[in-house]
Amino acid sequence: MLVKRLMDEKILVIFCDDKRLPTAKLLPFYGRHDSSLQLTKQLQWTKQAKGSVWTEIIAQKIQNQSCFLQTQNFHEKAKALLNLYDELEVFDPTNREGHAARIYFQTLFGNKFTRESSTAINASLDYGYTLLMSLFAREIVKNGCMTQFGLKHANQFNDFNRASDLMEPFRPLVDQIVFAYREKEFPVIKRRLFDLFLVKYTYGKKEMFLTNIVADYTNKVIKGLNNEWKGVPQFRI
Image (cartoon, rainbow, N blue to C red; front, side, top):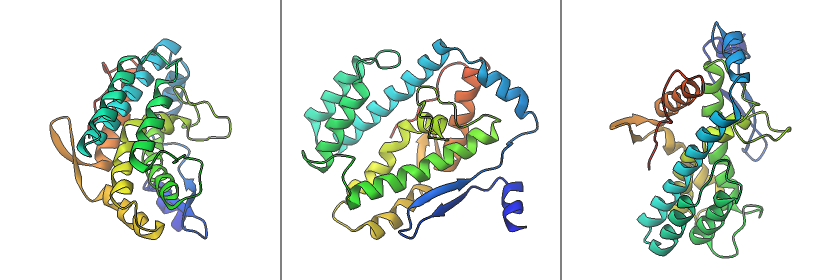
């Protein structure tokens, strides 16, 4: 009965493993009364529209990464990311996003840092990104869409490809916290990551909580793909 009530109220439930790392999410199948109509619209999104929206989302991420490096006085590296941003093409065939990520993470955490290593920093990044992805997955379902079909992400083993696409500009919010506590152990950083939900961020000339920003951002991106709203909302750190 408790789980049913949580689903009735559209409350996101996250399950963790014995190391307190998120391993699963519980979401309702249908987020609105006209889910079939919205799913039909989603399946009709054109490759051109998806490419345009995805590329703008990635552009925002690279700009936010550059901005964060700038605040930490990594001015040359921040400029290098902006150069990659200027070279970004639709669907990023030259992997400017990947090059930017390598410069960005190695600038923050050292030249030997990789996202594949088993470290407290990577565990913390993964934890924070999972929190973000969970927020976006909930809003995608509330808007009547399937989370499996992404704009570019197409991993057949990832049920949250769509959320993985939309969350990209928001990743630096997690990075900021992990960088600030990079000398601490994972349990300490994990607790600090919940600050994401306690502070307000600037969005559309307003100060808003992250959950409200994600709801508006997701809704407008989907409306844009449905030709019901023009452009992609902007999120800047």
